[in-house]
Length: 223
Image 1 (tube, rainbow, N blue to C red):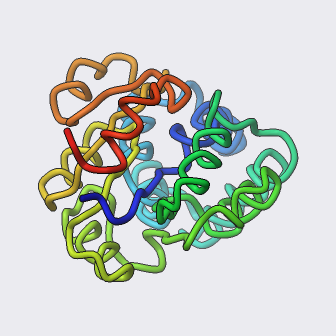
Image 2: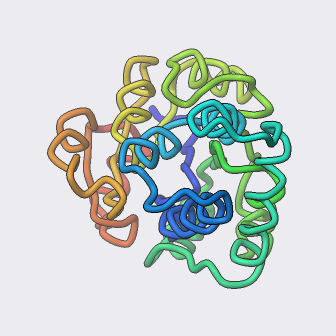
């Protein structure tokens, strides 16, 4: 039986991955770096913001501190998260149904806490959630299975968790930790969709695509 349902934020509940590509272009362009290297985008998309900031400084030999880089990213992203980024189709309706069914729900994200808070407040999701856990708070990367074990412990549920997540590497880590994993399609990982399907117990185009029968099976753990 699934005891807690957890959701990634960027690319799973919030249609926000594209804004980070725009931020990479804007920030690096200010440093005279253009175009943005594809392998750089791949790295920062798969690491927490603090780690990505350290990597950015080292990769391009920037004079800025990692904290300066984080602050610049935060400033560029703040307006979008607080005022313009939409939810993925059907995301709020799905959370409302789960909440109405008495499911325990939380967000597990590597998003910067102020941005995460702003987006969840704007879309009215906070009252539906038991908590919001960030990689910054837990001090672990989402590619580390230990993160998911630590998150489960916070809710006192061992490994009895279901995760909705768009990143294949994170899905694989959560499954390694013993979680049930539902992969969610996002254009950022379009070239890795087959991998996502392989590492997850279930795969959906968006949470809007979770049919009532499948929804019941997902939240009750009958896979």
